[in-house]
Length: 340
Image (tube, rainbow, N blue to C red; front, side, top):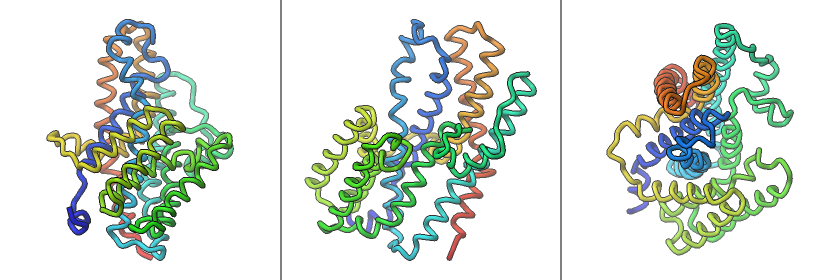
């Protein structure tokens, strides 16, 4: 495929891959967190244990996708550093408006739920809400209102960095390859310090798998060079994050580069809703609906719990579609209108 055609081809595989990754995270959290199932139960061991073990697959897929698609999008637009303010503001609006809306909804709904169910009122102060909105809780050890938001903090750090380095890494010359590896080596230097798992340098190797995939997709590096560099990166991912991260990254790379099409149109729609589902599923699915179920039916067996989990998943998908239409889609439109 020529460079020209690559610039105009939509990579639809990313859409359904996002959907599967988001659904996977949602399933893991609804079914397998906070001891919902007894890990010694025969039903759990027979049907669910392997699903829970796949829990570490989904986040690295999102990071690989971001590494690829952000670099790919900037390259298609002939991006330069002059456009950095517009790029950064657009990404922040795209991410932060839905995220802050989800925080407000979470605090309000949890408070209403505590009143209705006569359970303990959540202790979210305005300060804690503000810190979560700007990720200041990471630095002050304040609790997350939405525990999945740690990945958003990593993503925003990546957006901040990639907009600065893309002009120096996207070319096909040796200097561009050396610049990318210099960034990785610098990040690896910081992983030796305690607490770095909260920051981008700890995960940059996973994002780099996506960036290298972009370079191969655009024909900026040869197959042999790609194979060698990607082999090293995947080995680093396995050493730093474990085999699950490395395998998930490999699968994401293969799906993206082959642009494999799945005949299930619903998965593409799910990909469209992936961010909304990611934002709302913990509060709605776990902290409200699942907690209500376990309080109302404390002696329920694994089959009833499974059916309840499927129902909760359906409610989360329905609410995600509503959240997308009312909040995320307008935020995307607003971000596109930013021009400096």
